[in-house]
Amino acid sequence: MIQTDILIIGAGPVGLFAVFEAGLMKLKCHLIDAIPQAGGQLTEIYPKKPIYDIPGYPSVLAGELIDNLMEQAAPFKPGFTLGERADTIEKQADGSFIVTTSEGTQHQAPVVMIAGGLGSFEPRKPKIENLPQFEKNGVEYMVKEPDAFIRKKIFISGGGDSALDWAIYFAEHNNTSVGLVHRSDTFRAHKDSVEKAYQLQKEGKIDFYTHAEVVGLNGEETLKSIEIKQKDQPNKTVAVDTWLPLFGLSPKLGPISNWGLEIEKNAIKVDNTLDYQTNIPGIFAIGDVNTYPGKLKLILCGFHEATLMCQSAYQIINPGKKYVLKYTTVSGVDGFDGTRKEAPKAVVKKIE
Image (cartoon, rainbow, N blue to C red; front, top):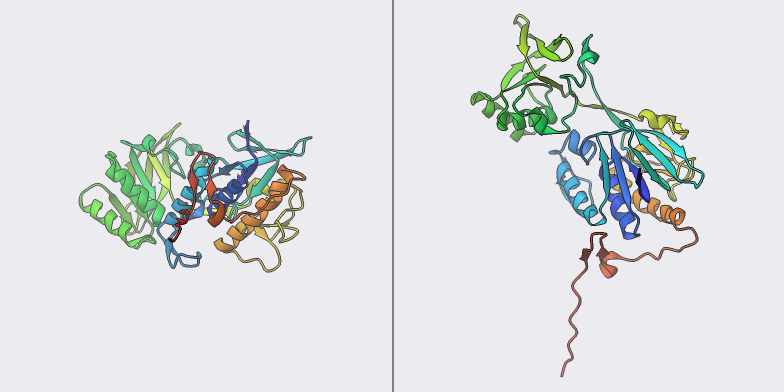
């Protein structure tokens, strides 16, 4: 059982910033996310795309923003359960909650904060009749442990950043074969990634199949080959160990929609904008996952919501104890890891 002060569902930018705000109040956080790395859709879908509306950053790459938020949260030693979806929640006699993930991992906390962005991201799956037979037996929708794929015959389908970046990664790490299948001959990815992939094709490290798609899977218990249908070409059977259909992620509230929360238009309704608490005391919703009159789905709004939410969380965890707001410019930042950040002290010198 993992125990913490605030259990955060969603390790995207808003959830990560909440770790920092909670840490200033000496509150410990643990984060759950179905995606196998922190950052939410910013790292999974568009890590190399610029964001222009983050205060203090005229332009910042999505992946860079996550790196900075991770660095900001690091002194407060957050825990992570990644690659697992939050499935069930049970309220305990002492008022705390136990949240169990899709893999059976249990977490207990007096406060649950849902910062799931647009919801739990589930992979968009191709329509192939026997696809379920090979899921986790040769068909994977995410790369959790890259080393497990090294020196295997891999084919990747997709035309976005994720498909290209993984094709490049495996091609550069001595895979026996890397194939990239795409329905078009243009890619929706960062220019550098596209150019790098074509360079690796020239070097014979990536096989491109454009205007093509995987239409069949073959094997008994595990995947042995795929059928590729290419424009103006007969179908081709290619031996593979792993097929990665990376067609993006589809946002859904998922099991959270069964937690008894008030839902409005696939978002969690919060009762007020004082602390963004839901209809269940002790459960908060912040960021794009919530809704209220005047709601704007912007990262900077989620940062504001996280700050106010932590004030109420403190009162739940420390009933009757008043928290005195301290400015970091004056008090500095003391991490749980023993580090301290503070402004240089002014040198006072007597004038004689």
